[in-house]
Amino acid sequence: MNINNSNEIPVRFFINDNIKVEKNAIEELDQLLTVNESVATLKHYAPGYFSNENAKVEEVAITPDFHKGSGIPIGTTIFTKGFVIPQAVGNDINCGMRLYTTSLKEDDIRSNSKKIEADIRHIFFEGGRSIPMTKVQREAILKEGLMGILESQKTMNRSGLWAFYDARQQEEDLSKVNRLGSFITDKVDGLDSFLGSSEVSYDSQIGSIGGGNHFVEIQKVVHIRNHAIAKEWNIKKGQVVVMIHTGSVSIGHHAGFNIKEMLKEIYPASLKHPKNGIYVLPHSEQHASQWNRYWNLLHNAANFAFANRLFLGLMLQKSLALSIKDFEYKLLYDAPHNFVWEENVDGSAGFIHRKGSCTARSAEQMMNTPFQFTGEPVFIPGSMGAKSYILAGLGNRDSLYSASHGAGRNLSRGESVKVDDALFRDFIARFNIVTPIDPNRNDIKARQDILKKWEEELKKEAPYAYKNINDIIESHEQFGMAQVVAEVEPILTIKG
Image 1: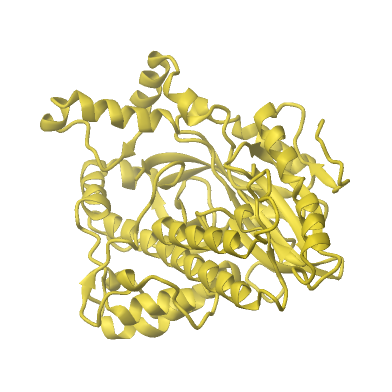
Image 2: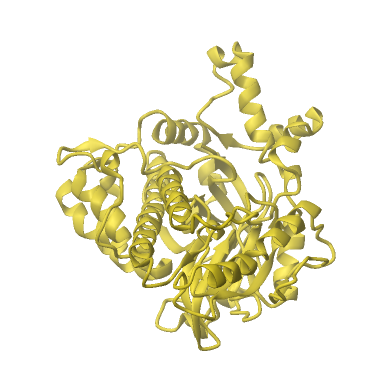
């Protein structure tokens, strides 16, 4: 790859020859690599800005789904010392994947499809979430994540969706979530309107899928590649699984906005702001209050995202339970892919930022967890209607213990809307999707303006807008990042 890298930052690409790398993504990466120039300027003209004189970007790893983002390319993992780069996480903090295994078969879904789809539309989009909460529950979520829910839910007396919250099972499931789904912080920053009062009200934020490439999907296992790990993870051919992809939605945007404004405020007034628009937050005594506020905002949003995926899982479980009785519904794992971790790499302390990449740790790195004999579960979805993959991490040091979070865009959202209409018609005829708009309703059929907008949103996420998922997976195996355990295909997809 030809990249401008005058700072000689080690950059490693994990992309095989079958995958096209777009010029605009390389250009965006080139701009990112100038961060060390900004850091050098700050060290020279603003003494005390950094406590660590060795503050710098140490190395960068690029995953196979690499493509242009908004300032930071998607599929970028960055290891820094002495500072963090909040934009290398983005606003959708702790966007991630959650996967459940079930005892259901495809026919269980197909034979009840009309009622299941109607129940999904009601529960997800037509006021049927029924998630009562007070300020106590909302505050516990933002401060303590899944552990906070476990402690505070007792007062809800299993009302509404809480009837599907099994406290004993949820306590056991904490070990199946990255960092236990709980970043403990003692403050909620600027979210009073979300917290509400001590009165019970029905939450409109939790249980949000969000837009873009986020989804909840009912899938079937079509092929087992690693039978030993599949058995350990309770994955069987023909089985139905549920995959959820979403993050912190509006709470993340609140955190991202406040963090960016804070970074601008502390930047020295005497210096020109970075040309690439990327600001760093120093880990220094001079900016200790801003440092602490950053982690509060980050953790509030991350905790919400963990809770959001949990409740989306419960909403889908309820949607199925209204038609199907007595089925198993077990969490396999919940894995973030937009976050920053305080980590040691080769014995050196720093910060690993993952923008559109997820952790893919080895069995050894997962000691004292349910995955100490298998490696960390990794979920890589294809585009809408395409195959997705369940993998096990191999702990590749050169990739900073990371893997892709999806197929990666091949066309921008604007370009996707302009694709041949016949191609879209062919896709949508074969694809089973539930959205807030039901195009089969008579009143909707008469509204061409609404249908056009509905189609445009789907076109942006259609298969032709994304890279070939098989090439992405082959790269992971070729470079020893993760090994495939199972292949799954969609039965029904829910989009926000």
